Length: 166
Image 1 (cartoon, one colour):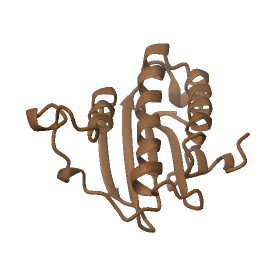
Image 2: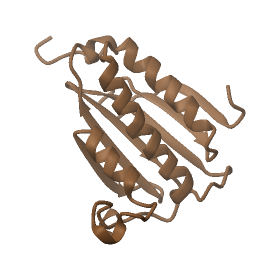
Image 3: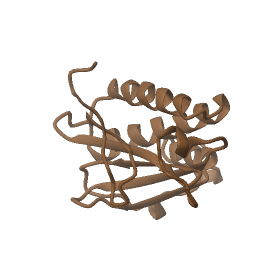
Image 4: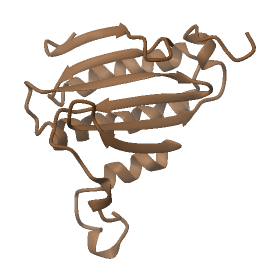
């Protein structure tokens, strides 16, 4: 385990459903830790390989953005990543300790004036790979990105989440 990883533990949210929580220092090498834990959790939930791949890429990009743009690569600041299942949706939250972010200030990476610019592509890819992405101010500052992906199979049961009617 990387020295700046703060660990993984199931953390109940307000609905008391099990979730996975990671808190990492803002170092790019910690993205790999998030990826490995996420991949293992998704595989254990029975999520198919293609979905695991695209969700993994979106989460990697969200964590990279939190490290680079949110926390400005300050290893003393943390990025928190939580995920769990709500119904048949995988829900991932990525939070940084930065100054905040307004996605409306980004231009489309497909616009002619932005084709050669390096910024904005990651968000474009995240939107392509996930069903929905929302941005909000974090509860203690920074930005919280929420990524949602409908997953086939029985992910809620794999995490021990009771289903409606049970």
